[in-house]
Length: 121
Image 1: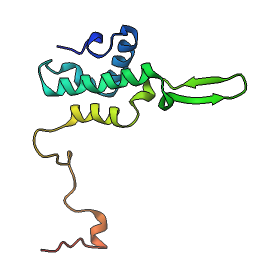
Image 2: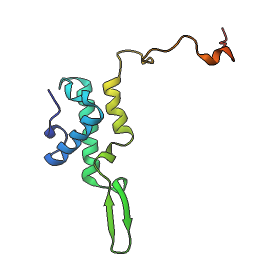
Image 3: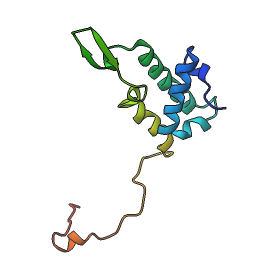
Image 4: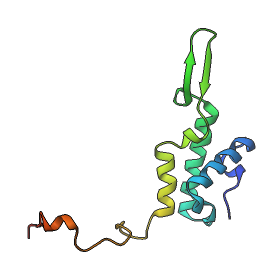
């Protein structure tokens, strides 16, 4: 079952905006089964993002002026900066078991002809 707005916040508009941003960061989270640990983790990350945006604390202040006392808040997207974004991406890219490099890597690099790599036994 997909993550629904009422799973992450009581403010439906905010929840929908957060879910839209999350979809652009890690679309796979919307395919998790609602009984899985990954789903629960994704929902907890999204709840924290909603709480941060709703609180609009000092972390969300983008700029402020003293004359006329103005405060500009950052966008919802900026609430995903750092660990929320990394956490959601990790849920999508986490391989089962040990995390190994993905991709095709050449056996020999051109630089190895100049400086051969040696490894202690």
